[in-house]
Length: 74
Image (cartoon, rainbow, N blue to C red; front, side, top):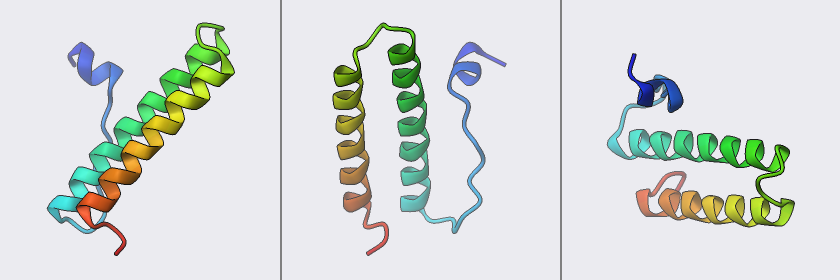
């Protein structure tokens, strides 16, 4: 196992296999990992609660944009 796989594990996709679903799933997993890192940094005092909130809010907007561009749920 290389370091990247250890630090950024990906779960197997089990939904309807379509390219847009696979891309969104990868984006969702990346969002989840980044939120986890931000939460850990905030818990350890490396980021303020306000900074953490703003970073997560920006990540959410990016994920939402991705969903819209891929046409998921429409």
